[in-house]
Image 1 (tube, rainbow, N blue to C red):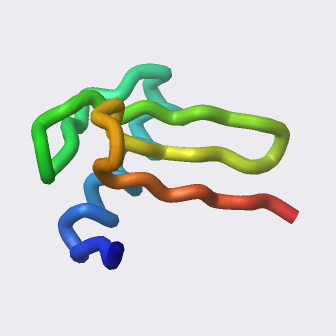
Image 2: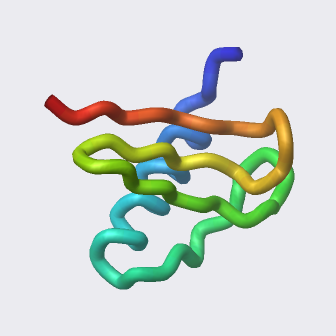
Length: 61
């Protein structure tokens, strides 16, 4: 499923909040659900807590 620009911007904002403030205030633009960030080494996943909603995985080197 292709994400719209506003959805990608919301996920980017959530990542910034997570690493800068340690908490995420941004909500999912699709459903209003909570956005979570899961970090594993130098990769991370940012997603809505609602099943089958928006999700992005970013891999490090």
